[in-house]
Length: 553
Image 1 (cartoon, rainbow, N blue to C red):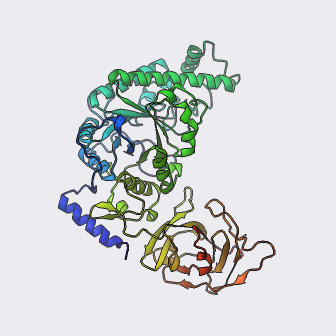
Image 2: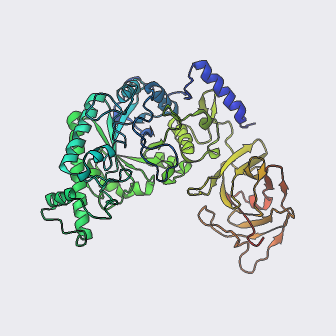
C-alpha cells in the first residue's frame, strides 16, 4: 500500500530532523550528489545543474518591479546559501559579481560593494562551494546599471529597469575593469551575462543621445542619418556591430583575468536578428535560452561553437511546465537552470514546505524548485521527501495531472491521493471555469477515480457542470444536484490549449447521446465526481476534464 503522509506529519518530522542537525536557518539538508570536495573541472561536468537565488529584484509583484535597493540582503550568510544549493542538488551556484542595482557582492573591489555588506559574500561562497564540489558563477547585467547611468547621464537613457545603456567607449572600459577585477579577486569559475541588448530609448521617445549618435558614426563609418531616416537594415547592422564589440570586450576581459573563465550568455529571445549567427553565439562557453523552449535551442544549435554548452531555464516568467521541460532537457543533453527571488531577509527560500509536497500541489517558482531538486538528485517527479531525502515511492501515483495555466492569475493546484484500488485528485481552484489533463502513469486506471473540485477553505467550487473525455467518448454532467448526464462519441484532441466551454462536441454527426448516471456529491468543502467507467474503457492514456458555469443562469 502506498500513501502520502499528511502535510502536518511531514512538516513535523522535517522540523524534528532540522533541529537535530542544528540547522535553524530554514534550509533543509539532503544527500549531496557531489562525491568530491574539490572544485570540479567544468569540462567534465556531464549535466549542468544550476540555480540562482536572485538578488536582482525588489520583493513583491514581478510586473513592473524595480531593481533591489542597494544593500538589500546585505547580511546574506555564505554558509547558509551554499547549504541551500547543496540541498537542492545543484552542481553550479549562480550568484552575483554585480547585481542590477550596480553594486558588487564582494569587498574592496573596483565596483563599490552593496551598502552594509556583512560578509565578503562572493569570495566566501566560492570557497565553500568549491569545498562541496560545486562551480560558482557570478553575474553582470550588461545593458542596465542605474549607478553607472546616474553618474554618466549623457550616456544613459535613464530607465534603469530596462535596457538603457549604449555601449560607448567609456562604458565598455568600465565593464572591462569590472569583469577583470571580479574574476581576479573572487576566484569565480565564470559568470553569466544578462541583457546583452541595445537600449530601448523610452525616456527620449525614440530620440538618440548625442553619445550614441557618435557611437553610430564610430562603428558604421558614416554620420547618424537621423531617427526619421534610419532604415531597419541600418539599425540592425549598427546593433550587431555594437553588441559584437561589447561581447569582445567582455570575453577579452574574462579570459585575460583567467583563461579558463566560463562566460555564460543568457538570451531571452534566441532568434532575435541582433544576435542570430553572431560571434557571441559561436564563442560563448555556455549559452542559455531564458525563455525555456527546447525548440528555440534546437534552432540555434548550428550557430554555436563546438565547445558551447546549451542550457534551458525554468522560471515563473517564461511559463514552462517543468514536469515536461526538465525531462525533455535531460533527454536532449541540455543543461538545467532556474532562479527565483529570495523570500526572506536572509536572501533564502525555505525548502521544507516545498520538498514535503507533491509537485502538483505547487506552482510558479516553488514548483520549478521542486522538479529541479528531484532531477538534480536523480529522482522522478513522483519522489517523496522522506527522512531528509527524496525517495521513489514503491508504487508511483496511477496518474499525473496537468492544469491549464492562468497567466498572471492565481494558479490552480492539485493533490493526488491513492492506495490499492481507489484514487482521487483534489483540484484547488478559485475559478468557476478550468481545465486539466489526467495522464495515466500506471498500467491501468484506478478501480474508482474521484475528482474533487475545491475552491478554498471549506468551500466547494462554484461550477455548475463538468465535461470529461478520453478522445473517443465524452461525458457531460450537471453539478447542480440533479445528476443529469449523458455520453456519446467524442473524437477531439485532448490538450490544455483548446477549451470546450459550452460547445462540448459530445457526439459525431448523426450519433445520439445516451443518458448516464454519474455519481456527483456535494461535500462540505468540495464537489466530488466519480469518473464513469465508460471513460476508462479501453484504458486510454489521457482523460481531459473541464469544469464550468452555465452562463445562462
